[in-house]
Length: 392
Image 1: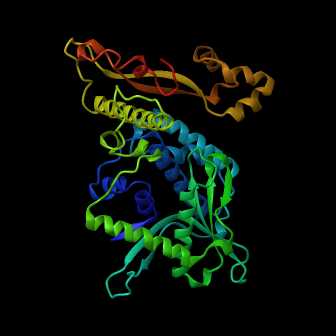
Image 2: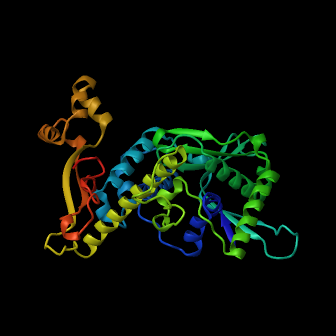
Image 3: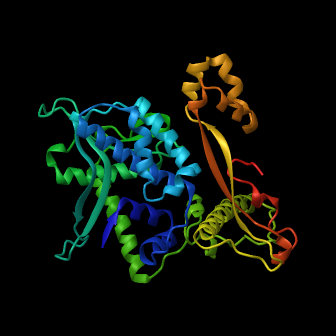
C-alpha cells in the first residue's frame, strides 16, 4: 500500500469518502471547483514551463494561448464559465508573477519516502508519495545558508492557510528531508494563492519537528490499515460532503433529509444547513450530468411530448477590466461596469473599446413540463431554471 497526502487527508476527513475514492473507485461527480482547479493548474504548468525553457521572467502575451491549450481535450468547454474563470486567474497570475527560472530546481515532480513498519520487522514498509508544484532556492546555492522552498499553487477563492495546507507542507518537508539530507533544517513550504497574488509560508524552520511529523503519519497509517482489516469505513459528515461522490446516498449524511424532519433545536438547525449544502451540490451535479447527456445523445422527451433540453444564450463579457479603465478613464468606465447585457452590446459598435469585450455562450439544462413527470406538489420549483449568474 502507498499513501499520499490526499489519501491521508481524505481518510481523516471521512473514512467513507476514502473507501469510495480509493477502494470502490466511484467516479467523482463533476463540479465547477474541481474542473476550474484542474484547468488552472494545467495553465500554470504550461506557462511556467514556457518561462523556464525561454529563460524569461514573464510574458503576458501568451496567456490566452496557454489557457486554450489547457482546454484542448474539450474544445466545447471554451464557451463555459470554467474557461472564463481560468482566463481570469491566468491573467491575474501573469500580471503579478515574475519567475526566477535560474532558482528553480524542480517543478511538478513526484517525491517518495518509505515509512518502515511500526514493529521494526522486515515487512515491506509503506511508500508515502506526493507531487509538489515547484521547488526553488532562496539565497546563494552552496553557501550553506540557502533556503529550499516547496511551493504549491492554490487557485480557489481561499487566501488563508488551512490545517490541510499545513499538514501537506509537513508531509513534503518530511519526505524531502530523507531524499536530500543536506536540506534538513533548510526546507520551507509555502502556498501561493494565485487568485489573490498572496504567498504564505506554512511554518518557520524551527517549527518543523520531523519526528513529530513521522509520528502523526504513522498514526494515520495505523488507522487506515485497521480500517482495511475490519472493512469499517464510517462516514463523517462535513463540508466535504458537497463534493463527495457518495454523499447523495450516504445514510448518515442524509439522516435528516426528509420532508417531515423538524428543525427545533440549534443542533438540528446546524445539521439542516449541512443538508442544504449537500442537496445543492447534488442538484448542480445532476443538472451537469443531464447537460452532458443531452449533448452526447439527445434531450429526453417527456410523455406529453415536451422536451427537457439544453438551452444556450449569449452575453457580452468584459475581457479586460483594467484595459477598459485605462482606455476610457475611471469616471467614464464606471457606468459600463454595472450595466446590463443589452446596454453593453452597444459598446461593440465603438471601435475604441470593442476589442475589450468577448461574446460568451452560457448554457443551462431547462426542465420542461413538470406535470408530465407527475412530480409531487412543491417539488422542482422555478429555481431549477436559474443559471449560475442568477438569471432566469
